[in-house]
Each structure stands twice: as C-alpha cells, then as structure tokens.
Length: 502
Image (cartoon, rainbow, N blue to C red; front, side, top):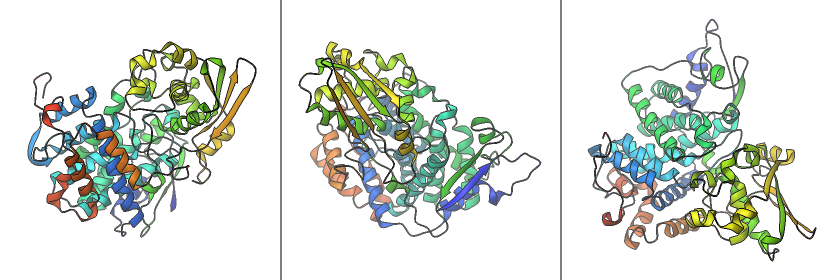
C-alpha cells in the first residue's frame, strides 16, 4: 500500500492534476490488476448478504415508498428493483435508490470502522444497477464492486468525518462513482471528474444519525448512489467538476474538515497491487449498529450467570470513544433512553440493546425493536440502569491499524443490589473474522434463507443463490438474475401510484 498525504493548497500554489488525491483514486480505479480470488469470493458473500437484508425489509415503509418512486421511472432494458419481477426494468438511478434504501433499512449488512464509519455494502446497489442497464457481465461487476470497497474503506482509514459532524456518505459517494467507472472501463480522467463531482455534492451533516433518528438514515446511502450515477453520467458527457476537490482553498479539507492547516494520510494500493479492502470489512449477525455486535454476544454470555435481572443495581459499559459518544450515554441524546423512540433510534442505543439482549438471550430484527418490547416495564427499568464510559484502551484498540488488535467491544461491569459484581469483556463479535464463529459462505446463505423465509418462495430462494454463486461467470443477459422476486400479491407498493410527484 502507498500512503498519500493530502493537505490544503492555496490557489496561488498550483497542484498538478496528477498530484491531486481524486486523480490518485481514479488511477487506482483504472489499474487493471487481476482480481484477487479471496476478494472475489467475498464479493459473492456480500451480494448474498445485501440481498437478504433488502428482502427482509421489502415491505417496510421507507423501502416500499422508495420502490414506489422507482416505479415512476420505467425503462426498457433498465435495471431491476428488489421484490419486482426480473422482466420489469427501471432507470438505473431510481433502481439504485430503491435497492439502496432496502439494503440499508435494517442496519444489518457489512461494516468497516476506523477513523470513521462505513457500510461498504452500500456500494453494491448503484454499481449493480448500472451494470444491468448498460449490459455489463459478472466479471466486470466484481471489479467495480471491489473498487467501490477499496475507495471507501481507505478513506475511512485516513479521514474522520464524524468529529466534524459530517455524515459518512461523503466517503461512500466517491467509492460508488469510482466503482461505476471501473465497471464501465472509463479512462482515468473521466473517473477523476466523476469522483470530484460525487464528493462535492455528497457532504451532509450527521443530524441524520443524531437524536430522534428518522428513516433518512436508510435513504442517505441510496441518495448517494443516485448522486454517483449522475456524476458519472455527466463526466462521460465531457463535463468537468470542482477541482481540486480535496485540496482546494475553498474545498473539502479547508471548509468541511480540519481547515486550512489540515493534513491527512490515506493508504491506497499501488499499481499492480490487488484490491483486497473488502476482506477487511465484516458483516453483522445481529440487526443493530455494528458497535453493538460484540456487546450483544457478550450479553448472551453474561446472562447465563444471572438468575434475575431485577437484582441488578447498575451496569457500566467501558468502551471506545466512538461507542460511548455515538450509541452510548456520551451522545447525551435523551431519545436513546425513550421507550417510544423510533426503531432507528433504538438500534443506535447500546443501553437499550444490551438490556434486551441480557433479558432475552436472542436478537431479532423485528421482534427486538417492537414497541411492546421496548415499552416493557422491566426492560425500561433495566435499560435506565445502564451507562457507558470511555476507556482509553478500548479507544486505542478501536483505532489500531493491526486487524489482530483492532476491537469494537467493551468491558462490562454489572453491580447487583447485594453488593456482588459480574465482570466480563469481549473484543470482537462472534461473527467477526477473528471471532468465535467467523461467518463463512454457509452462514451468509443461512442468513439469506432465514431473513427471506415466508417472503419469497423456496424456488426463488434457490434460483437466486444458484445465480449469485456463479457471479464471475454471469453473462450480461444473466445479470438480471441477481434480483430477488417477491410474490406480487404480498408486495406493498407493487404498482405505480399517484401519491407524490412521480
């Protein structure tokens, strides 16, 4: 990997195009290195993973509304939309919108955490949509997805958006644009322009993940995908973009991030080096914010030593800065302690999550967030006894570049009313590559079958799984088979309506 330093350049200090970071991202995207077999295998896993969570959410309000918007944009030879028949097609940007919302709705797909946060699987819907509309094959799709992951993961390693209260889609949109460019075999300059445009329009604040969290949390990455597709389209027509987008005197670093004196270091694979960033990412076994994954598993383990949760006086979670301030009591969000909070808010409350996991010993993407579950009196009582504190050692491990040291867990101290204590800790979730039960292909298939059971037919389940596992060999005509079809009589918003503008 090559480490690239990025800083602000005043307008009077010219920065050559080839020295700009957006160009370096584009050059990496056009480097025609052979695909790493392990990375290709993981792309298939993540295609299964994103499809499973998309279908599990297919009739939820935000997803059905996004789909109904897409239905207003039919296109012969366009892209498929999750839930709809494979022979119905829509404009790529609107298919990406509908599918991206479905993938993100349950907060149940892959993650990468470093200097900032990310859900790199959000790269898949727009790249797949463009591949279907423009007749690309499975091998080309794999290359595009790997580049999308590579860009986003490495930006997350080097640049923190959260400390400046910026949403993490600012690292996603350039990855989506670069991935689409690689998929289409575009030249370096065209991808360079697309990346700059995508970054320019994708900065937004973190209010979407603060306080009473709304459905926009699911829409945000889908909106990013639409922006990325439009950015690539403009660049393909010869249009230029704000430049230099990272280093400019009035640009991203200077006014969105660390300011005029800001400087960042971001790694990227060099020429001829495999794109393996996808192998550093990790999926979720439980439908909750990733920093809750290990704590859910830890709650399952600790509850075996607790006879009665009513006997608990207080629980303290000693954890990282990010966990404490984003999903813990350090956020100072009263909504995280509110029994009537939205599902989106509850899945960003480690206090709620740990209480329910400790009481139930199971976690379900619907039942664990149901209003009747959240409002149960004994749960509310336990929930309000939980607090988080930042532990410097957990913060250090969270940011450690060594994947064998990096951790997203906590040490939990449970104090009982009789004065006794129970202490345990867990560094990584069981499903993590270094966890007790690392996810393998059978686990991804099992997750798909579990989440889609009762929603799709067994025949459709098998058809999709057979198709996706042949991904590198799929022809352009077979790429529509990467959609998952739901019986239309059970699908909400399966027909175009007139509730809105489209």
